[in-house]
Image (cartoon, rainbow, N blue to C red; front, side, top):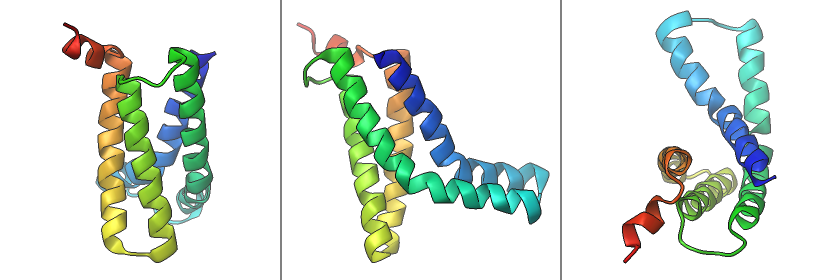
Length: 131
């Protein structure tokens, strides 16, 4: 079950980051404007905040089912970065300080990198600190 939740979170992360990478690809290749493109971006932005909360909850359940305890792990690092990114995004939506948004995006980038490490080598932290 924990594997299903992990892959579900990967899918949700792809949807949450889609407004950024779709816009990036569109600006550099397709150059679509208006119509369906604008509607897709609008829907993706509307689901961004609820998905952030869902990913945080699912990540906690995923980690607990996988490990059964709280310990240092690549998933724990990814979860911590997720918590920080969600917190910064939530704070930004409340106070609208540009610096919070910038830091939110930076932590999302760190989160994506940590998720890649988690997928490729989940026990990397344990391997580093094993005596």
